[in-house]
Amino acid sequence: MRRIVDSGWQNISAIRRHKAGQFGAPCHALLHTVEAVNKGLLLCLIVLCGVLAGTPAHVSAQAQTLTPSSAIDSGLASQVQQFALEASRKVAIPGLRLQVQVGQLDPRLRLAPCTSVQPYLPSGTRLWGATRIGLRCIDGAARWNVFLPIRVDVFGPALVANAPLPAGHVLAAADLRSAEVNLAATPTAPLARQNLAIGRALGRPLAAGSAVQAVDLRARLWFAAGDSVRLVAAGSGWRIHGEGQAMAPGVEGQRVRVRTDSGRIVSGVAVAERLVEVAL
Image (cartoon, rainbow, N blue to C red; front, side, top):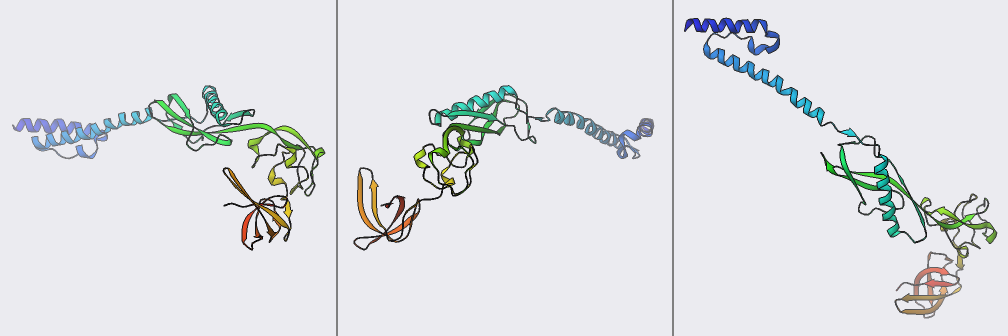
C-alpha cells in the first residue's frame, strides 16, 4: 500500500510540475493520500471541463449573430409597393393617380435572416403622404416584426396660381388655372372649383404654380353686427327657417349670436350672405 501511495504521489507530482501553467492553483496542493489524489484529480477535471465547455457556447453565440437588414432588396420593395398601391386604390377617389415610394428600415436594426417576409397594413394606418407598412417574418429562425416607411403620393386636379400673387390680392379667373398636383403634399385639400376662390382675398402670398387651399384665403364677412339675417336648422327630412338680428359680425365659418323676433338668443355659424346655420 505504501508503494502505491508513493507511486501515485510521484506521478501526480510530475503532472503538477510540468502542467502547472494549464491547471493552475487547484493542482498545486500536496496530495498525500489516495483520497486526496482522487479529490485533486476530480477538481482538476472540473476545471478542465469548464475550459472546454466554454468553447462551444462561444461558437454557438457567433453562429446566431443577427445580420443587418436595413437595405430592402428590389424584390421586397416591389412587393411592398404593389401591396400599398392595391390598398390605396380601395379607399382613393376614382380618377386620382397614385404613386408609392418605398423607404428603408432603420440602419440600427439587426434582423435574423428570413426566407419569407409578409407586408401588412398596421391598424389605423392612413395611406396618404408619409406613412408606414408593416413587415413580418413568417419563415425564419426568428419571427420578427418591423415597420417600413413609405410615401403615398396622390395626384389630382386643383387650382394653381398662374403668377406670383401678393397677400390681399382678390382672386380673379385670370389668376387661376387647373393643373394636376400632389394632393398629399399640402396640409389641407386644395380647391378644385373656381367659384370657391374667385372674389376671395389672399391671406398670404402665393408662388406661381402653387395650389390654392382654403387656408390661403381670408375669411369672408357675410354680414355686419345689427344686420337682419336668416336662420336655418335642418335635419333628416326636415328644415326650419326663421329670422333675427345679428349681435356681432358674421365671419365665415365662425359662430355668431342672433336675437330672434321673439327676443330669444340663439347661436349659429355664419355660412353665407346673411345666413346663419343653427344646430338643434
